[in-house]
Every structure is written in structure tokens, then in C-alpha cells.
Length: 303
Image 1 (cartoon, helix red, strand yellow):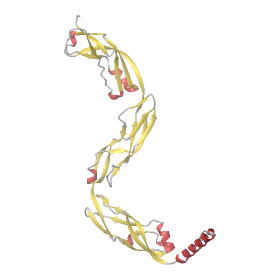
Image 2 (image 1 turned 180 degrees about the vertical axis):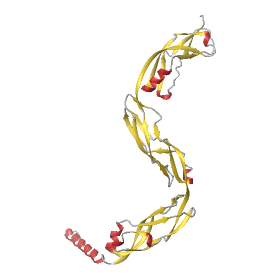
Image 3 (image 1 turned 45 degrees about the vertical axis):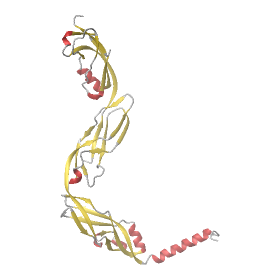
Image 4 (image 1 turned 90 degrees about the vertical axis):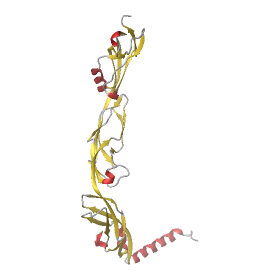
């Protein structure tokens, strides 16, 4: 029977519901509304650590006005001119509720009637910045480290116990791919996980990603013996080809700074003996170098 002529029955139920709303819209009643708590700390020597986020406010008014009020997000605002200690108890009342008073409703009660606020004295320190960028160069290019960060340190401020735990701050993670030239990005800084009430200034840093092309260069360099017995041996061959690979600018600096390669000779060998050729790098990890051949023959002088 319920399924017989169900569209008509559903329509009748909807009409009855609208009539009920119309009849009850003018009735006055009380309604409890979750209300956001806004705390304005005006004492610059202290930082608010912990406080409730919401309280319950009871409003009285007509049904239609109460429904409209809920959509307008009322707030309870508290101004703290002077912090008297690490823990303060603040009284809450209907007069602190901010809402559209032209809607015909009235705030009558705030629950709880008081709250406890926890404060800590303000502290600040300078900490280094770590660039958290994922960089992938294009084929034939390389990213040169470290990335350049400007400024390379920032000021963190907040509660003393929180600030003491912060040794560095990181940028937001950013991924850059297929890099063929230097890239500059203004990257926001992340508040360290697990900390509360921390402010960072400046809130972002400029990160430069140096990118250079990969090159291979070859040069012929003489071989020199070093060590206690260096002047009592002779080297064959007396020169080798040195192949330098890496970022173009770093390879150029390496070739400009090296004039020979060396062989370590601690004692005069009894006869011909192979020894590895050492190519000293002066440009860090941006280049690699090898000799051809990798070993030369060390003989006693006059043999």
C-alpha cells in the first residue's frame, strides 16, 4: 500500500513539512551554537600557547532568525591587554559574542563561563635555512651543489621553550625537473613540525639552483715524482693524457689550476715498477679526472 501512488504521497508529505516550518518559524526558542573563540593578545612580551578553539553560545530568537544566525559564524572575541603570568583565567559572557544583532536574536549564555589560557614569554633566535628542493637536470646537464639561499638564515620567534628546540628551518618541498639553466624560486618556509605559536621572518627565501652543461676535456700534462725518493727515480712515460669530466665552469677552473700530475715514490724500487698517477682536484665534487694511462713505470735513476 505504501508503494501505491508514492509520488503523490511524497508530495503531500513535503507540503505538510513546509506548512510545519511556516507555523513554527515565528516561535521563539533557545538554540546552542558552537562559536569560534578569537583571542587578541596585545602584550608583545608574551605568546599564547594553548586555548580552546570553540565555546558554546546559547541564543534566543525565532526559528527563522536562529537558522540564519548559524550561517553567519558568530565569534567570541577576547582582548588581552596585559598578560599577568603563564596561566590566566578569563571570564566569558554574552557581551563578548560578536554577531549580527539586527537579526532579532540575543546571546544569553556562553559555556564554559571561563577558560584557562596558557602563555609563555616571547623569545627569538637566528637559525639557518635548508633548501628542500628536488632537482632533476635534463640530459647533458648537472645541478651544482650547494643550492644558493638568500637569506641563508632567518629569525624564528615564539614561546621560549618552543624556540629553543628549533635548530634550523626548511623550505617547502619543491620539485624541479628537466633543468637546462639556472632557476630562481621564492619558496615559503615551513614551521617545524611539533611546534606551536612560531613565527618566521622573513616567511620565504630566494633559492637559486645553479645548472651547467656537462663537458669532457682532454689535456696532455707532465708527470712529476713526489716523495722521499722522488729525485732518485725516473718516470716513463714522462707525460700522460688527463681527461676531465663535469660541469663546464668547474672543468675550466680545474684545467686552469693544474699544470702536472704526480706519482708518489717513497723508496727507490729495485727495478721497474708500476705506480698510479694522481690527478689532484681543486674544484670539489663538480668534476672527475683520470689519466691515460692510469699507471706509469718508475725506474731507479740511471737504470
